[in-house]
Length: 125
Ligand code: 5GP
Image (cartoon, rainbow, N blue to C red; front, side, top):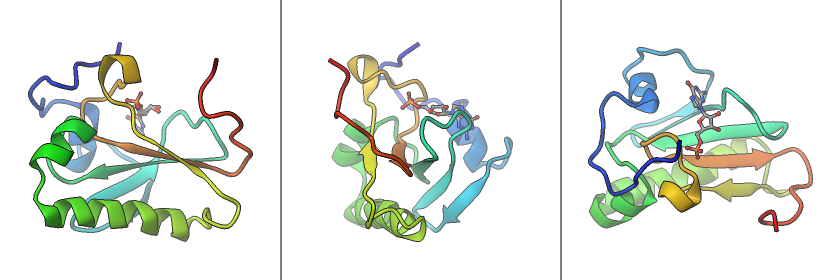
């Protein structure tokens, strides 16, 4: 079920549990701003999720409320992970789902990194 991206942050969400170490993950990268790990249900040969360490529901509250340092740190981490995975040369796709129409299912901001194959058209018609 897609979530309401305007709801308050819920500390019981699955990515909050991953950040607290309560649920295992296959970590790709971690720094003070971000954690990157393999998606449990990959949609492409490379499917990595990058999440901020802070308590943000979506891109909406993140871009409204996060201090500049957290914004920059997170965005740089996303780019760093893509480079570490060798994605820039062949190309890749970044995706952030937000709320109901975006079909966001986990209420902690995450950016999907897809790579390893031709991604095709941007959206299904
Ligand atoms: P959304 O639709 O919210 O943008 O995507 C949520 C993503 O989180 C999905 O691709 C789903 O496979 C992934 N996911 C959900 N639960 C877990 C989990 O416990 N571990 C990992 N690694 N990924 C998860």
